[in-house]
Amino acid sequence: MNTTKYIFVTGGVTSSLGKGIISASLAKLLQSRGFTVTIQKLDPYLNVDPGTLNPYEHGECFVTEDGAETDLDLGHYERFLNVPTSQANNVTTGRIYQAVINKERRGDYLGKTVQVIPHITDEIKHRIKLLGNKFKYDFVITEIGGTVGDIESLPYIEAVRQLRWELGKNCVVVHLTLVPYLKASGELKTKPTQHSVKLLLENGVQPDILVLRTERPINLELRRKVALFCNTDVSSVIESIDVSTIYEVPLKMQEEKLDEAVLRKLGISTEIEPDLKSWSSFVKKLKNPKSSVKIALVGKYVELPDAYKSISEAFIHGGAANNVKVELQWIHSEKITASTASQILGTLDGVMVAPGFGHRGIEGKIQAVKFARENKIPFLGICLGMQCAVIEYARNVLNMTDADSTEFHNATPYKVIDLMEEQKGITDKGGTMRLGAYPCDIKPDTNAFKVYNSAHITERHRHRYEFNNEYLSKFETAGMKATGINPETGLVEIVEIPNHPWFVGVQFHPEYKSTVINPHPVFVGFVKAAVEYAGLNKK
Ligand code: GLN
Image (cartoon, rainbow, N blue to C red; front, side, top):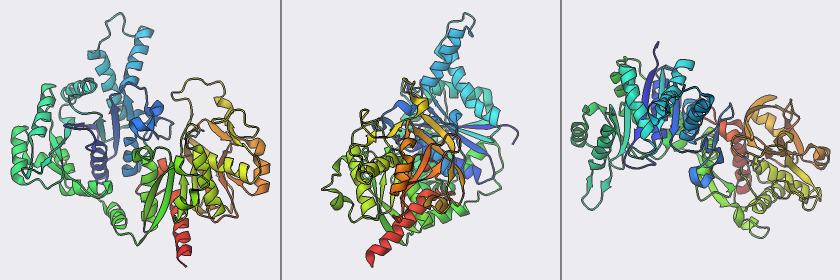
């Protein structure tokens, strides 16, 4: 297509309706018709990026190839589309204001009074159009974070209002709302949807398409009612009913013809049907596993599964690739001690120790590693999980009592994990870690080589500390090998214990690169090892 089309997705009534999944599903349907699509998230908070946010606040921080710390919805976009996102795909109010204030300080506004309208809204519009202008996508889907009516979201909705005028026919607004079921009266209620559309109208935006989240099917009569009250045609009222997995949503949206409604509004032919064969076969596999394995996810934010979103999704992909369901056991690291480890982990088929920051929960993670190592249970350590594996090995095999990471114990006599050289002068917290994709060379005849089937890979990073190479030869002689190394810096990226069936620690985050179409080899390999271990168990 020679002009980029812009699709805005707004949300009404409540948060957590799944705008990210609806945006990703619509994008998938358009991509499956042969179009190029990207999705962008606008977040109305004042943090410049979510990198400084506690996971309890906002769930996982997703990292892109180019090292942006972003909202977890970008993970869904990549998992659905199998196309990497970048810095430009996540914009926050903090970033917008920072850019405007920097321009003001440079004198770019030539003495004008700097205001929300037009300066902030111009900056928002610039960030939206950048994806179309620079990368020439056929479709840019922009998800507006928050709920219509929030004070924080107003400048974004105003930018959408302005863009509708500028873009004319090349723009569509999809509004996602809730149709609650009232048990007492046995009815679905459309009033909250009517009110949220009214709120949008007050802000000058008429939605073209309404997606109604619901627990129960919405009949034609109700759809007609919504269409009538909300100034739209009935074929633009789309039902989005609860499904058992988010990966079913694109199939449901295809049944509901969401993509057709969008294309019709944009005057684009709907003749070519989306090809969702490989997607459907993934969903089929997912819903019909042959057996199951139990894998521990040991972390300190387990009360909030969103904190480990990409990891749990990568296990879903890795499970489907092995025709099994991975039953993740969410285990709080503070519960694991030398005396509880066997009771908590003893019946499981794999142990995964999660990424994280700070001292809380570390000793439990180290106990989990020890239990998996000694009992030859398949083990995967990611980032901090890998660092815990190194600390455990130092303490219990190399007899370096009190070995530690300087993140937790600066005065340790054995700094087996230490601050990276380039981190030493840094004091600011935001955007200053080792972030994004770096290369790694993998040694032959290792589990890492087996899973990747390649000697050269790149993986995404988010950390400040590293394996201290001063100790490398001691570890290797004792039996823990560095099997993946950054060819430019010599940083250890992967450690393994060859006399254990499957013990792999990775300094990077493989979970960020796992998608439906390309389940990540590390997760596929780890789940496979767990399946084999489970088989051994039963004998
Ligand atoms: N806290 C560790 C570091 O900064 C690990 C980070 C992580 O797990 N993402 O190196």
